[in-house]
Length: 414
Image 1 (cartoon, rainbow, N blue to C red):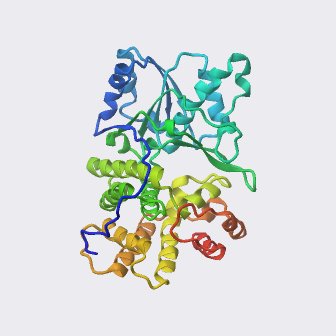
Image 2 (spheres, helix red, strand yellow):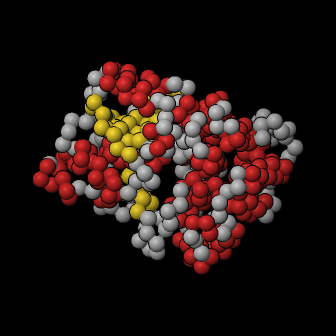
Image 3 (tube, helix red, strand yellow):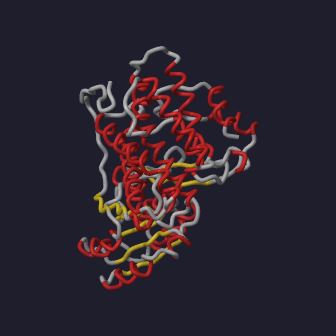
């Protein structure tokens, strides 16, 4: 293995999920009204963030461009992670009107809400006006619902204003119900046909993103790239994309955190996050995201915060366990090592161990420099984390951690 080479992986059987059409570049949001018009959309449900969108330089310009194209819109502000009650409310308010497309302009929660609304409006319409009140997105959520989502949806456009979740490129919408104890959940509304028709990556929309949101979302993207890269079901297709994303994130993450106006670095992180969405959709994720789904249902803690605060400690625990097997040719260990070089693309190759050291040094340095919050800041207790460790899903992690090892990771970030 050298700094610019990697083990050759023969192509075996695999399935690649659909990806949306992509428009990228500063100012590309201006192209959205023309895109809608050429595809015959006349009336859209517009899901956005709140203050960040209202303060955006593009808000009034977008509204004016929509009016010029004769496209009617109705706006809904999404605050926090979407709940079943929020999705049900929007769908019932819009199902009786002739909306034919949904656009989500915001962070991952906004885009998830847009995806869920695009899927649920046709479901409500199919039931008829008399039965609309009995239709809920809850019934279609993976793992808790009793109904299968239908393929039908409205047109769907996603425009991220953070660089993190990759939701602009995936087929699932994460719906949350936060409750202390056993009642909370974060579950997906998922169908192959829920991949957006169009993703717009406009770095101009990211320039006002606050420093800490930039850090949390950026580390979420890095987590997704790394976990999908070492996933037990990764493929040559996802590996190439994950590697590209890791290089871009390594070169740009700290820059955008310190200089949010840097349009080139914003563009690089936006594309890295988009790639993370494609890789997670095709290769799944690992321990950190298994923990995020559980912890996020217990406390009102942003998804990106969980991922960013767990990333360094969990990667150390996993790589220590891999290195303890004394097999430097372990495929997962080789990938973790390569990830260290990719995040530090100027570093020359020395050996596998040095690559792992580079990776861990980088992740712990980011944790310190970005002053990432701990779980105690969101009300978690040690007793609670010890209990939650027993319920954490490893997903497609290359290593299965013991309950005690998971407890050590959790409490290290308490």
